[in-house]
Length: 279
Image (cartoon, rainbow, N blue to C red; front, side, top):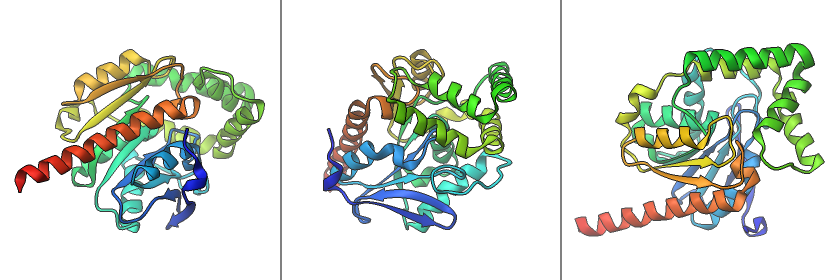
């Protein structure tokens, strides 16, 4: 278990984008990209663990999330551009990128469109693209939930469906509140650009070390789909996070943090060995 008292965690802004940061700015950078409805603060155990392992950690609040105001989005590339702007604003030339769900698709697009900015990828409970019929069915289902119960009803159903174990009443209320704060306009605009994203045919272009994480009890992106994603990415490795749903970094923070940090440390060791061979 990590101890946040040993790490200085701050909130900073680059333009209109807020983020949670920790670790020395001169250290290798790690960017954490959250799932829909979540914020940078939800990565706190991973922020602390990665900073303690020697990383500069930046957990981004996507537009409309955490402390970042929502700005209308018409194309998925706009979300990726926001991430690049954060890196530029913090003078981060290259980073390891860990993305969950929507954040995982952002991480894939970032690695494909800006390969020089990405050192490695950790992709958790995510996808490169959804079949059109699946995306349409999900949008219809969420629209019906909103029509029946408003944003509060939709938020409660989404949160309950994402979790495997029952959280405390206060934590459940906090997560539901985050989706309610996001609001219907932002929720449906973000889902629309996400479901329209088409990256599957480009996965063979990825040329960075990649770890794919699948949560054993996730019904949104089941383990089988994560294993298929792993097979489609050259050289990717797969690891299952047990006893977790679609938010494994929240339900199993220690297991998720260990998987993330061990992967990063192996990459750092490989880089040092490679430089040693060159000399």
